[in-house]
Image (cartoon, rainbow, N blue to C red; front, top):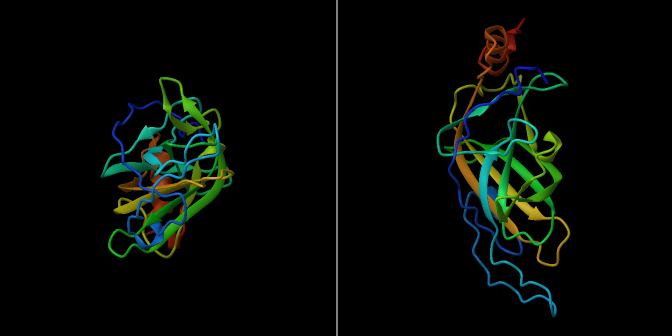
Length: 215
């Protein structure tokens, strides 16, 4: 990615509570899934959690903790190595019984709940050193968070518009198959420090994308 991709900014603290069950999720409908009682595990094994709790965050830099997102926060559009622009997002999770999870990140229309963009992948989670009850994506690698491909997009303007960012986490290999879902309103923005890179991003991700952009 461009050198402007990785820079240090102050962390945005806050958290969104994810709701989930050990079973199916109806997150795509926008409804909160009902909570089922935790099932007792085998003798000596931990009981299945009633739900997974999620704190939605944005990945900025390798070996740097997720920037936790609050309602209305900007979602950074980054230069992707293969071209175009992406957002890199994930979640800190409490209640996991396994370190391997499936993550799906969805960008939704806030009025209709319609899916606009998404990314699905399997990632590795690690306990947070200062708060081991919670686990975070393995922040040593940017591959361990969702990368939602955003721009260019000739069908709609994605820049400076309100969207819902929805993160769903499901345990990949576990008897519980715990699920957690959380949403937070966000606004995708080009926040590059370099003015030329920022202008190119604004063209690629704004209403002029259909007419072509040049650096």
